[in-house]
Length: 312
Image (cartoon, rainbow, N blue to C red):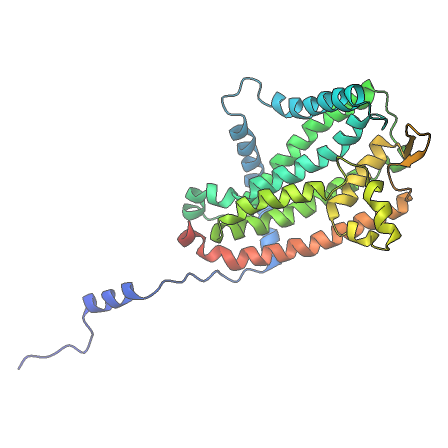
């Protein structure tokens, strides 16, 4: 008598498994562990920053000199256009512009590059095990290097135009830079994960950054809009933009000109007359908010990275 096996047919089981929908569940890694992993892989982070720098100017003759030429060209053009042709009475408008533009170039470049970094590095994301947050942080690190290079142009411009910084506020600049890096890192990690699932994010960011630029007092003085908002008791709306506080810190410390006489002999205010203590408080608020956003970004990244391989 022939015995029948109690085990199901292997081919039938394999067929049923293949028909099931696949859902990869991300391992539950805590925020503290993720921070530890970033520190453990810090050498990889440095290597990826170097890679970002090499890729940007690959096969370029001038290399990093292009990073210096960009702000230098802005400085020359705006000096000629606004100071010589349009006869803008605002003293050294080109220096004022460069103080804010330096901050914005870092912020914009960091977010634009970080948003697409996971998608652009799909090959290693699917094959190599490492903290994927490092990809976004590498974009921020590369943008920071370019910021430091462009800062040399600003320092040279201050020397050429004999602009004396406000030494009572100059010590605030490192804190402002720390707040900027922290805030950009938090947004970079979140955007890099979201863009894997919603590829329109990278295109949306172009529009958001454009609007964000004109919502920050870079091309125009803070007082142009600040006075009107203060009259309506809405000045707090201006400071909901963390980049505004950081730009104002750079302008107050490096440009250091509070007002000027216009053609009618009227005194026009350029920058707010807040004390260094006010700037410290505002920068600490930005840093604290950035810390919360950074933790939230790590949590979001952890929830989304489980299906990166499937989406990529």
